Length: 254
Image (cartoon, rainbow, N blue to C red; front, side):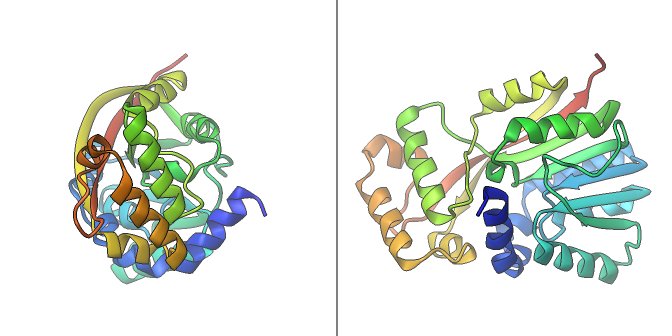
Protein backbone atom coordinates (compact mmCIF):
# COMPACT_ATOMS: atom_id res chain seq x y z
CA UNK A 1 0.00 0.00 0.00
CA UNK A 2 1.33 3.46 -0.93
CA UNK A 3 1.83 6.31 1.53
CA UNK A 4 -1.10 8.21 -0.03
CA UNK A 5 -3.34 5.18 0.50
CA UNK A 6 -2.15 4.87 4.10
CA UNK A 7 -3.03 8.53 4.71
CA UNK A 8 -6.50 8.06 3.22
CA UNK A 9 -7.18 4.96 5.29
CA UNK A 10 -5.88 6.55 8.52
CA UNK A 11 -7.97 9.70 8.24
CA UNK A 12 -11.10 8.00 6.94
CA UNK A 13 -11.02 6.04 10.19
CA UNK A 14 -10.67 9.02 12.55
CA UNK A 15 -12.40 11.86 10.68
CA UNK A 16 -15.07 12.55 13.32
CA UNK A 17 -12.42 12.93 16.01
CA UNK A 18 -10.71 15.73 14.07
CA UNK A 19 -14.01 17.56 13.63
CA UNK A 20 -14.39 17.72 17.42
CA UNK A 21 -10.72 18.23 18.32
CA UNK A 22 -10.17 21.55 20.08
CA UNK A 23 -6.63 21.70 18.68
CA UNK A 24 -8.07 21.78 15.16
CA UNK A 25 -11.44 23.50 15.65
CA UNK A 26 -9.99 26.42 17.60
CA UNK A 27 -6.71 28.29 18.00
CA UNK A 28 -5.17 31.73 17.36
CA UNK A 29 -3.88 30.62 13.96
CA UNK A 30 -7.43 29.94 12.74
CA UNK A 31 -8.27 33.56 13.57
CA UNK A 32 -5.40 34.64 11.31
CA UNK A 33 -6.91 32.75 8.36
CA UNK A 34 -10.27 34.39 8.99
CA UNK A 35 -8.75 37.87 9.34
CA UNK A 36 -6.73 37.49 6.14
CA UNK A 37 -9.78 36.39 4.15
CA UNK A 38 -11.79 39.31 5.52
CA UNK A 39 -9.02 41.71 4.51
CA UNK A 40 -8.34 40.23 1.07
CA UNK A 41 -11.91 39.32 0.03
CA UNK A 42 -10.61 36.79 -2.55
CA UNK A 43 -12.82 35.73 -5.44
CA UNK A 44 -11.51 32.16 -5.43
CA UNK A 45 -9.89 30.52 -2.42
CA UNK A 46 -8.56 26.98 -1.98
CA UNK A 47 -7.90 25.05 1.22
CA UNK A 48 -5.47 22.15 0.74
CA UNK A 49 -5.80 19.20 3.12
CA UNK A 50 -9.08 20.61 4.39
CA UNK A 51 -9.94 17.83 6.84
CA UNK A 52 -13.39 18.39 8.37
CA UNK A 53 -13.53 21.92 6.97
CA UNK A 54 -12.39 24.19 9.79
CA UNK A 55 -10.46 26.58 7.54
CA UNK A 56 -12.82 26.37 4.55
CA UNK A 57 -15.75 27.41 6.73
CA UNK A 58 -13.69 30.22 8.29
CA UNK A 59 -12.95 31.58 4.80
CA UNK A 60 -16.44 31.13 3.39
CA UNK A 61 -18.09 34.38 4.60
CA UNK A 62 -15.46 36.45 2.79
CA UNK A 63 -15.00 34.60 -0.54
CA UNK A 64 -17.14 34.27 -3.65
CA UNK A 65 -15.96 30.68 -4.16
CA UNK A 66 -14.17 28.34 -1.76
CA UNK A 67 -12.62 25.13 -3.02
CA UNK A 68 -11.38 22.51 -0.56
CA UNK A 69 -9.48 19.28 -1.22
CA UNK A 70 -8.50 16.34 0.93
CA UNK A 71 -7.34 12.75 0.40
CA UNK A 72 -9.98 11.41 2.83
CA UNK A 73 -13.54 10.95 1.60
CA UNK A 74 -14.75 10.72 5.21
CA UNK A 75 -13.21 14.10 6.02
CA UNK A 76 -14.82 15.59 2.90
CA UNK A 77 -18.22 14.19 3.86
CA UNK A 78 -18.04 15.90 7.25
CA UNK A 79 -16.87 19.17 5.68
CA UNK A 80 -19.71 19.03 3.12
CA UNK A 81 -22.32 18.44 5.82
CA UNK A 82 -20.98 21.34 7.87
CA UNK A 83 -20.97 23.65 4.81
CA UNK A 84 -24.59 22.74 4.04
CA UNK A 85 -25.64 23.34 7.64
CA UNK A 86 -23.97 26.76 7.59
CA UNK A 87 -25.65 27.65 4.28
CA UNK A 88 -22.39 27.93 2.36
CA UNK A 89 -23.45 26.62 -1.05
CA UNK A 90 -20.37 28.26 -2.59
CA UNK A 91 -18.01 25.82 -0.83
CA UNK A 92 -16.99 23.03 -3.21
CA UNK A 93 -15.15 19.91 -2.06
CA UNK A 94 -13.04 17.46 -4.06
CA UNK A 95 -10.98 14.39 -3.25
CA UNK A 96 -7.43 15.14 -4.35
CA UNK A 97 -3.79 14.95 -3.31
CA UNK A 98 -1.84 18.10 -2.49
CA UNK A 99 0.70 17.04 -5.12
CA UNK A 100 -1.95 16.85 -7.89
CA UNK A 101 -4.34 19.76 -7.47
CA UNK A 102 -7.22 19.67 -9.99
CA UNK A 103 -7.09 23.38 -10.84
CA UNK A 104 -5.65 25.49 -13.65
CA UNK A 105 -2.49 27.57 -13.36
CA UNK A 106 -2.95 30.92 -11.60
CA UNK A 107 -6.60 30.10 -10.78
CA UNK A 108 -6.58 31.09 -7.09
CA UNK A 109 -6.48 34.38 -5.22
CA UNK A 110 -5.85 32.69 -1.86
CA UNK A 111 -4.57 29.24 -0.91
CA UNK A 112 -4.48 27.94 2.66
CA UNK A 113 -3.06 24.83 4.30
CA UNK A 114 -3.35 24.01 8.00
CA UNK A 115 -1.88 21.03 9.88
CA UNK A 116 -1.62 18.91 6.73
CA UNK A 117 1.84 19.27 5.19
CA UNK A 118 3.64 17.11 7.78
CA UNK A 119 1.77 14.13 6.26
CA UNK A 120 2.91 14.79 2.67
CA UNK A 121 5.43 12.33 1.31
CA UNK A 122 6.73 14.95 -1.15
CA UNK A 123 6.34 18.35 0.46
CA UNK A 124 8.31 20.07 -2.33
CA UNK A 125 5.83 18.81 -4.93
CA UNK A 126 2.92 19.98 -2.77
CA UNK A 127 4.29 23.50 -2.35
CA UNK A 128 5.13 23.59 -6.06
CA UNK A 129 1.48 22.76 -6.86
CA UNK A 130 0.27 25.49 -4.52
CA UNK A 131 2.57 27.98 -6.23
CA UNK A 132 1.29 26.84 -9.62
CA UNK A 133 -2.40 27.45 -8.86
CA UNK A 134 -1.80 30.86 -7.27
CA UNK A 135 -1.92 33.94 -9.45
CA UNK A 136 0.95 36.42 -9.16
CA UNK A 137 0.36 38.70 -6.19
CA UNK A 138 -1.99 36.23 -4.48
CA UNK A 139 -1.61 34.95 -0.92
CA UNK A 140 -0.66 31.60 0.57
CA UNK A 141 -1.15 30.98 4.29
CA UNK A 142 0.45 27.94 5.92
CA UNK A 143 0.07 26.67 9.46
CA UNK A 144 1.94 23.58 10.60
CA UNK A 145 3.66 22.10 13.59
CA UNK A 146 7.41 22.59 13.33
CA UNK A 147 10.50 20.64 14.22
CA UNK A 148 13.45 21.71 16.33
CA UNK A 149 16.78 22.97 15.03
CA UNK A 150 18.33 21.02 17.92
CA UNK A 151 18.84 17.47 16.53
CA UNK A 152 18.47 15.78 19.91
CA UNK A 153 15.01 17.20 20.61
CA UNK A 154 13.94 16.90 16.99
CA UNK A 155 14.80 13.19 16.89
CA UNK A 156 12.55 12.55 19.90
CA UNK A 157 9.74 14.66 18.45
CA UNK A 158 9.77 12.89 15.08
CA UNK A 159 9.93 9.49 16.80
CA UNK A 160 6.88 10.05 19.01
CA UNK A 161 4.97 11.56 16.09
CA UNK A 162 5.48 8.55 13.81
CA UNK A 163 4.78 6.11 16.63
CA UNK A 164 1.49 7.86 17.29
CA UNK A 165 0.53 8.05 13.58
CA UNK A 166 2.56 6.12 10.97
CA UNK A 167 1.41 8.51 8.21
CA UNK A 168 3.46 11.30 9.83
CA UNK A 169 6.40 12.22 7.59
CA UNK A 170 8.17 15.17 9.24
CA UNK A 171 7.66 18.35 11.21
CA UNK A 172 9.90 20.70 9.22
CA UNK A 173 11.91 23.38 10.99
CA UNK A 174 11.05 27.03 10.43
CA UNK A 175 14.26 27.51 8.44
CA UNK A 176 13.38 24.53 6.22
CA UNK A 177 9.93 26.01 5.59
CA UNK A 178 11.40 29.35 4.62
CA UNK A 179 13.65 27.65 2.07
CA UNK A 180 10.79 25.54 0.66
CA UNK A 181 8.58 28.59 0.25
CA UNK A 182 11.26 30.80 -1.28
CA UNK A 183 12.07 28.09 -3.85
CA UNK A 184 8.52 28.45 -5.21
CA UNK A 185 8.57 32.28 -5.20
CA UNK A 186 6.36 32.40 -2.12
CA UNK A 187 7.74 35.32 -0.16
CA UNK A 188 6.85 35.46 3.57
CA UNK A 189 5.22 38.74 4.59
CA UNK A 190 4.26 37.79 8.14
CA UNK A 191 5.24 34.95 10.47
CA UNK A 192 3.45 34.11 13.72
CA UNK A 193 4.68 31.57 16.26
CA UNK A 194 2.52 29.64 18.74
CA UNK A 195 3.04 26.91 21.29
CA UNK A 196 0.22 24.46 21.89
CA UNK A 197 -0.26 21.90 24.63
CA UNK A 198 -1.12 18.37 23.50
CA UNK A 199 -2.96 16.45 26.21
CA UNK A 200 -1.48 12.98 25.92
CA UNK A 201 -4.64 10.87 26.27
CA UNK A 202 -6.55 13.01 23.78
CA UNK A 203 -3.61 13.10 21.36
CA UNK A 204 -3.23 9.31 21.09
CA UNK A 205 -6.98 8.63 21.22
CA UNK A 206 -7.60 10.99 18.29
CA UNK A 207 -5.24 8.95 16.09
CA UNK A 208 -6.42 5.55 17.41
CA UNK A 209 -2.85 4.76 18.39
CA UNK A 210 -2.43 1.11 19.38
CA UNK A 211 -1.69 0.27 23.06
CA UNK A 212 1.76 -1.05 22.14
CA UNK A 213 2.64 2.20 20.41
CA UNK A 214 1.23 4.26 23.29
CA UNK A 215 3.54 2.33 25.63
CA UNK A 216 6.49 2.97 23.31
CA UNK A 217 5.77 6.72 23.23
CA UNK A 218 5.43 6.79 27.01
CA UNK A 219 8.77 5.03 27.43
CA UNK A 220 10.49 7.31 24.93
CA UNK A 221 9.23 10.47 26.61
CA UNK A 222 10.07 9.18 30.10
CA UNK A 223 13.60 8.17 29.12
CA UNK A 224 14.40 11.17 26.91
CA UNK A 225 17.37 13.33 27.99
CA UNK A 226 16.48 16.14 30.36
CA UNK A 227 17.15 18.84 27.74
CA UNK A 228 14.77 17.21 25.25
CA UNK A 229 12.07 16.81 27.90
CA UNK A 230 12.49 20.47 28.85
CA UNK A 231 12.25 21.71 25.26
CA UNK A 232 9.14 19.60 24.66
CA UNK A 233 7.65 20.66 27.97
CA UNK A 234 6.87 17.06 28.92
CA UNK A 235 4.48 16.72 31.85
CA UNK A 236 3.98 13.88 34.33
CA UNK A 237 1.12 12.32 32.34
CA UNK A 238 3.03 12.50 29.03
CA UNK A 239 1.33 15.65 27.79
CA UNK A 240 3.78 17.90 25.97
CA UNK A 241 4.06 21.12 23.98
CA UNK A 242 4.44 21.59 20.25
CA UNK A 243 5.69 24.63 18.35
CA UNK A 244 3.46 25.87 15.52
CA UNK A 245 4.12 28.48 12.84
CA UNK A 246 1.76 30.42 10.60
CA UNK A 247 3.37 32.00 7.54
CA UNK A 248 1.54 34.40 5.24
CA UNK A 249 3.18 34.65 1.82
CA UNK A 250 2.79 36.53 -1.44
CA UNK A 251 3.25 34.77 -4.78
CA UNK A 252 5.89 36.71 -6.65
CA UNK A 253 6.25 36.79 -10.43
CA UNK A 254 9.13 35.19 -12.30
